[in-house]
Length: 380
Ligand SMILES: Nc1nc2c(ncn2[C@@H]2O[C@H](COP(=O)(O)OP(=O)(O)OP(=O)(O)O)[C@@H](O)[C@H]2O)c(=O)[nH]1
Ligand SMILES: [Mg+2]
Image (cartoon, rainbow, N blue to C red; front, side):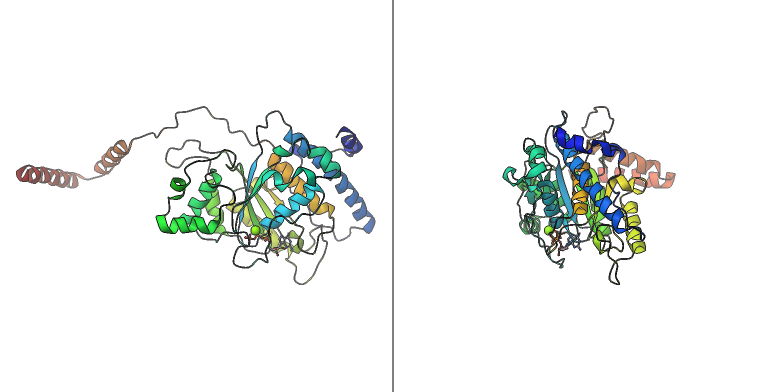
């Protein structure tokens, strides 16, 4: 790895912590052919660096296991295409492992598909990737590709996602079968039917996938935001430490996006795209840190499988971002048991209600209680 690294070290990288993930910018209109060639060369070198960095992140002494990434979003936004694109960037070769669709109303992915270690087998690695990942493949992220979800604030969807995020649902489980269980036994049944949570499947990073050519599914986004609230609503205690990241796909359909540089009447206008980005920032409250928490994405799609250094670059930056150490939340260990028993809660509520009554209401309440006791004892 060292020789590869040395070839590139004069390029002056700032290192991942100082670099913005979202630095895929729109092309300037006056970019010349020569400048574009040079830029392509620079990106090719950057990709080599990124592969080395990802291998280093696999081998960090504090890494105890691979990250588990959950790809979530509406039908047809390009979740499965993201998986295939990552596999290409990480192996150097195209393998069409995740089934992709045509963006119809029904989801093409039907189960919680699991792509262990980015869906890569050791024998599939070649060239630089082989040198970099052969001895640390088991530390590359595992990816859960989820069927597209409707934009409804449904208790069924909340339960389903919560169970997957917490590691209760085995990879490969069909969503239809889980929905049938909910129908037959009611919402709330899933953790009873799948009572064991596996640390191996428990999600560590949720990636919300939105498409540049679809409106933002705000109800679904709301579910995700609430599920990832680090604090328990009832106790206020710290609950989980799962980072949320947003991927905006199909940016090649946006006018001037620099991997395609194409323009045309059917392209999405930059203003429209930026409005959508602002909406994403608002919904997930990441306005001030959009660049660290989201990425503009383009996938390799059917019929477009030639090598593209820009697409590889986006995918490699994404994988690196997913492997950076998570934000540490400084907290002291506290007793996680409920603060009040249900009886104490009831008494507290009763005191609150009684305190809010005027003297007449209090008198009426006492009279009703006395009368009830009198009737009870007379009958008994
Ligand atoms: N132009 C363009 N098309 C894309 C991109 N990503 C995906 N697509 C196309 O969008 C369609 C849907 O892609 P999928 O990857 O199947 O989407 P999905 O989110 O997995 O869909 P479901 O599993 O059905 O929910 C396919 O026709 C892809 O070729 C992209 O970055 N650019
Ligand atoms: Mg899919």
